[in-house]
Length: 160
Length: 214
Image 1 (tube, rainbow over the protein chains, first blue to last red):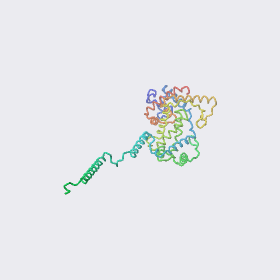
Image 2: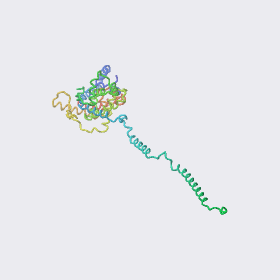
Image 3: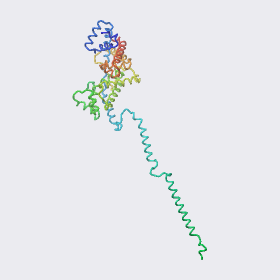
Image 4: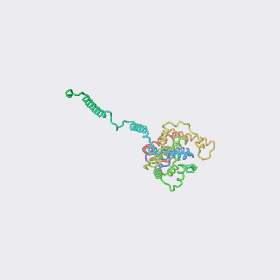
């Protein structure tokens, strides 16, 4: 085998050897190489030493309340309003909420206070008024004309 | 007591009681992915079982990563909350532990990156959030041996802390969680050869830094 120290790709063999994680045939092969290679002997011994030194760091024991706190937090999530649960947690939609509310308010205001589409606009009503006025005026003139005829004295020739 | 040495919680009419009661009723051991699929289907007991299985390793990994048990537990809470929140979209495409450690590593690296690790080195007799004394290994030592041990431990912790964050995560997964190169590569989202390179450089640094202790 090529020397792991020279072979960058094979360097992990020393790490794996130090961790005792080489496959049996790989370990045998490396042991054979190590006997004749001072650099690999030194490096493998140093790696094994560091491996056992790191063992000195003990595992921490999780605190007793860990689960309880976690379950309380989960319960709080579960109790959120149903409509919030329907929406994803990513929050990308959140900025859209005030915009949607503003739009809804505008629509509502338009519907409540906007122009009554059932009423005719003054522009449309104006010609009808003018026709009526003209008719009234014509009627008045006709009536005045009638009155003036009725109030005239009889022709003198009629007195005969 | 569970395998992590945590006492069973007192019964309460809450979420955890339902989980604890149902966990006991789960019979045959099941795979993590299968349990997670059950969680997706609304089975709270399966979540409790996953928590029981992986709580210890996640907290231990984060504790070594951020070097503070309180912070590690806070981050581990966030890890399991994210797992719970993601249950609806979970697909067993990758190994469950790969996914779990990916979340844990992400949170740990972010915490380190954000510079929130400006804290004093915890001493071993520091009280935890529970007010209990941290336990040192249960070998009986003389006072002198204890002092030597604590000095050695402090150096190991400092050496690990001096590693770049990604190398630190790789070493912790390789050494303490006994993960394969391929799994570490999946967690860190890099190639296997990149992981080998990371580990080789990290151990090289540790060998030079801790040579006098060996």
